[in-house]
Image (cartoon, rainbow, N blue to C red; front, side, top):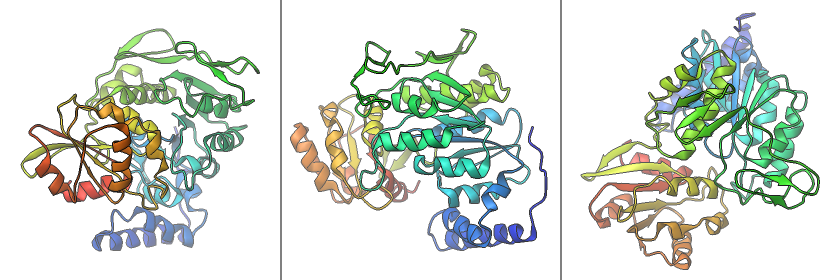
Length: 412
């Protein structure tokens, strides 16, 4: 168990206080939670504050292109069986947001921290994690994120010699290649629905062979490691071969995979799979994702999908046709301004659904749907879209800032 080795210095305490004040002003002005601006102010006053705030915690870092916010929440819920947890539950996952989150956890035992994949190595140096959960890597924010193999290489360099236990997805070749530089890896067979970023070997560039659930490179011998934990239908298989049932209120196969990884992380800290999985049932929604809200007299389920892999997983969990679907896409700085990723998404899967399209880049999406041969209507607002939807619960799928816009519009 971590112990609070030394109190914060006067400078650090001042930085924490100033950061909280800045966050409060931001919230009062209606500019969001204030966690980012609060963290920036605090780090300006004490550049080493993140390291100081983490020194008494058993820190678990969670990183991926998709699923990190949900997995962070599930791990935090499981570890609360052992003690108090501090976490950046709202998804502010760069150093400023992480600093704000940890500033509120002086009495916590665990810090469960979601980290943007581009910042993983730097944050790991600051907080000296006891464990790191690595879920997947795929194309995302094409205008500013590095090509996926470059990101995996950055992870690999950062993990080399890392003393933390690495809990990694054995089904994603990029994650396996990155994690293989670490001496202490627990492999989880969590699955990989989206494979379009992992057809070439990250080690040598050869063509990856994918017979069934296995994968390997015939040229250099790089291959899928033998997992010690696995998702098997509605159960998690632990290292002893015992099957533990997954009961979640969160929908879809991807969330079962997140639960399997979370159970493996919890076990590394002594929380048994049965206890961990039972506690995960309490999670109904994550930062508004999966919430069902009432708007204009209609039930709307709010779903977030930020990149091709995320859209693919989301299509698999929506209600079947003729359920109406509202799609919303923006291309602001937080989303990435390049919308060419829309062409990597198989929107043909939405055939048979009445579709309404909204968002800043609704016309980009309309062109993509037209080419896919899918019927749709372009709408001016969420209210307009709901009015045009036929009866029944509405599935709404939006990328990052479009999702935040929708939540504000529907009062969530």
